[in-house]
Amino acid sequence: MIHSQNTFLRLQGTDEEQFSENRQLLQTFAHHLIRPGCPAGEDLPRTILTALLPLGEGLLTSLGTEASGFPEVMDVLHTLALVGKGAGHVTLFNAATVWLQLWYVFKVLN
Image (cartoon, rainbow, N blue to C red; front, side, top):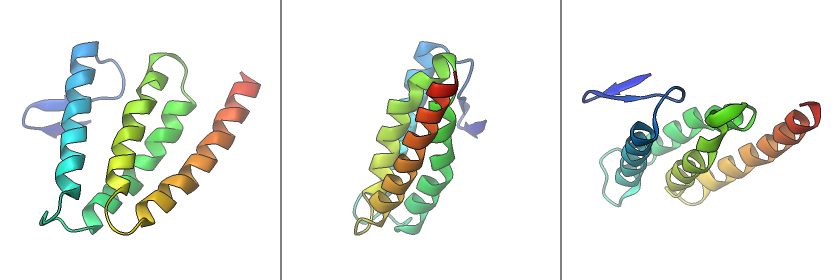
């Protein structure tokens, strides 16, 4: 759980309103990080992108409502991948190929 100004980001057990608010907060933060002239530079968005990649795998292989958050997480990952000269998209593409394989195996076994 991440705590930021009394806002708790949780993957499980949130109602729709809280989920929407958390999604908007994360998306706004990602857009702030990639804007030109951001003092964070290119390293921070790449680090956050790398840190969030396992979340995609977890969402795709989960049962129930947790899996419904994947498109929102993918949108944030795409935004973070925009920084720099495409290296983020290469990282995201490589992760996506692994996710597709895992998702296929998960669906076949369940």
